[in-house]
Length: 303
Image (cartoon, rainbow, N blue to C red):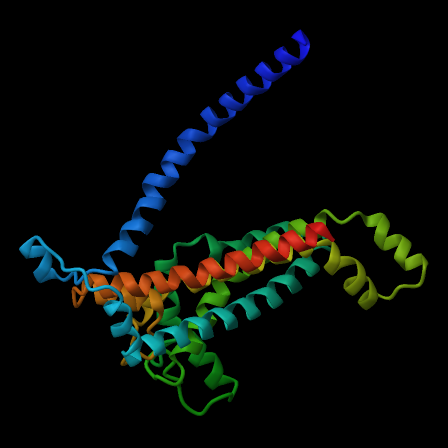
């Protein structure tokens, strides 16, 4: 009885210590993340504008802000552009990043140095990358157009960021270049953790390279693939600085995404309630994706 009582007290004490260690991080998360999210949801139900803030009172209008933004064609354009941009960027980043990860898994002498050069683009601030690609995609003097014209891929320079037909493709190219190193590094880590003995055994049994890739490589780095896709979706879906610096959402809302649309409503037209509503739509989309990811991971762990 005494031993059991002592063990219970020890467990209670360790539990208290555990909560004590977690508490500072919990307070930090609630203060810097939880409160802004709750406050943003709150103001999305208010008629909050620059005028109402000046008067010191904003009227409660329920779901009117959400009704208003979804009646605006720009909202649907921004929603479409956000998913278009995200899906294409993730597809290209993952495919090229995976290919590079497989290439560098060969362990040749210069692999480390080439990897370091490729990571430079990811380490640069996004605003710098946006300005860099804005100049590179310029129809006058841009290196991309110069290469395309010299290779006779086009007769005249393409107005990548100035035409409503090509602006999203220009942004996809720029963001793909930035995201490739991130995918490559995470997938390389997963590949490095696969024991070489498994490949040797499969080779002895007569498995070809394609079979080894499908039945050994992909299943054993499934967790890394899930993580790369989820993080890539989150980082890409909430893109702001690249679009804002490169195009500002133009020309004529052709490259407007949810983040820039929310920013423009809040800080250019000063409809803070509507801007908060757009931000909440973005948050819900990311939250649903996170739930799907957790469900997939949980099912995989059970299996």
